[in-house]
Length: 512
Image (cartoon, rainbow, N blue to C red):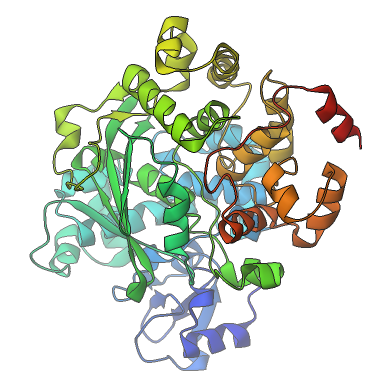
């Protein structure tokens, strides 16, 4: 990001939330760096320098502000930054990847050499990979000390430090504070629970996001009531698997989502918060997306692209829901979860807030390995048809083997092509998975019958011509259209996938 000092200072002086997380301001008179929305008195222009990451500010000797708390700033969406690979690496670091691995493993994960990753990272962020990782560990530790009552030993381990001694030394060296001194600054009377706040760039169409998720709720793993979303999750950290639950509630006055995690996720906090960011698309720049979509976004500004906690889960939902109603799909998925999902142990359910009138949370969604190994008889008992059974199992085997990855770091075009090679997955299903599992902002289900009807087009080619004006944000356009007109899959997930049956008519349509 090219930081124009005059523009940045105007944003600081006006506390403009559109710039929150896009840069940080270092104040030489205090040695502190802040978010542009910090409520302290605006510093003098000659005392300000600007940095595109917290790590860069810390590299230049600044300490994080204890008032605006830079660790709460919203992050970047992958589409915001030209250096997609560098940002992909940064996202993995933010989510705790380097607590169990080094730079070489990080480079391998995103598909480049270690030397190339170091060069990309320095060019994009102005700091080394290790400097960035160190800053993220410290900011996470600062958040845990401030927002939870976890013992210091657990804070050090959860943040990725090998020992409390190492944690104390780094914290004192970088911030001039000890863990206990930092904890004394936290609010008194905190409940013994894991509660965090995740910032976003306003506006956020929370009601529209909940409406999208609410009609797709699978009993046993999800609940939606009022303005609250609650679900189970499983997080793998190294060789350890952590089961628990997460509760999301919007706090619009503070422009944050309040996230409550079960205590069993104490050692998977960065990974769990990363899943929440992806589900709610908190890295979105609504000012950019809404301006590009124009009148389409006028009725519901701040619409997010609904993501997922697990890409394979979204794929299974899409396959199960082909051709049938949302009610039927939900019943089948609920039975599949109860028969093949991993039950939550009593410890993981401790502290679970009750939600009146909702079926209890009992399981996490089945893994790809579990569904690959699931006997045909169990699929039939759940109500899965033989054709969909074969498709789910074929996809699960490709996920287990690593042939296909369904996460935001996967190359979208290549992944869509590989998905379409699976018998039973056509373009609609592949594009829908790309929208939600990969977070691909330009994915678009051009064969969607309801969207074609709304846009008054009759062929796939005409659909692409009609929607070209919304590129590269066509996935957001699809969400707006489904929401505005109440068309499937907003009223049923998903609608029939015209390409799933490999029909002759569809082949002719594709050729057109």
